[in-house]
Length: 452
Image (cartoon, rainbow, N blue to C red; front, side, top):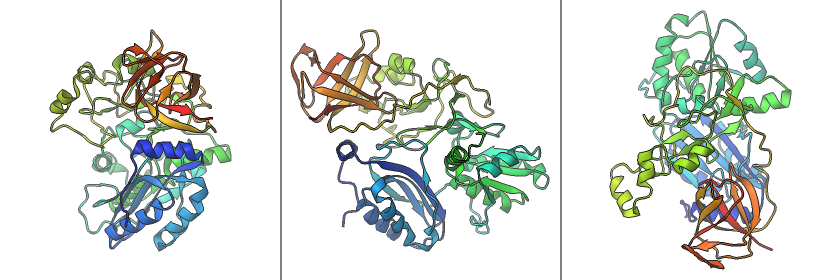
């Protein structure tokens, strides 16, 4: 009985590209009493693995929290796997505003103590006694009420790139930190104010709404389906967006744009920017905002110290990060004194810039291709890209595709290349290749050979 992934992320990405079929990025959650989370986990893995469903899922005695990527042709079969359980019959699937076939490249289902860590140890707390759900139109209306207090129950790195206008945005790194902070701050308004809350997909503010009702707050409301569902409704109903900026998401995209407003800055130079990245130094992996210019100059590092480390021999890098290795904790949330333009807490509702139109970035390329390797560096002045060959052989004259979440999909023909510091006509697995690229290359980019 297979209860684990047999393919690497790179192999899975190549299979997805070769299949050329549409996939849907979605999320859902449900609070319920699950007697045997381990068996529940195993049953889900078997059912979803058969449907080529990928994602990051947490299950616990209190319910399920899932962010996933599912082939569009299997969506009804996927729903049927949910309908088997009474507590998930008719469950809402929050479909992403922006789609990315590579949003998830593995199926990971973990058993946790709780699906949302809250730091609470109170047997009298009933998480199902939640606040009133509001749809987008109702949410917009209650925000206009002077007796409304709106609270963002996400973390500082999420609210920094986008939030509802006028919201309280706690300077926290975890959900559990925000509960006592907001409780203390609003003690005098249990009876006279509308306490309205929101988060990404609804799971955190649903628990928060139950918590504040438990604390004695009388008028507690939450945005149904979170920002993801709100964005969908305002588009369908032609409503004004009270949310400004980008919605941070916990997959490879790191965000989906709700409005064209950029409300945050590059943490290194201060230019308007809302693109999150992770420091390329594996011993750091800090999550921060970095513009393209700083990414090129700093080689995707958060500091000069990390930039020096990535140029050390690999064995020395391993020694330096001994005891510090963060493994797959991609969303490390710590702050750093190196980030001069990092802001948290009370954020501005005024846009610093307007995002450029990028309709072609997620355009699907209907061509047969095979993964060759990945980008390592881009030399801005020389307009040359450095790539590592990891799979297929590359030959002079090949038509290639360079693809990434920011770069989009760019095609070109190889007319000249330097292989391991010497001009050559062929590059094989393990080789490092440089060639002219008339556009900026990012470290997240992959290189593919287009097949006839």
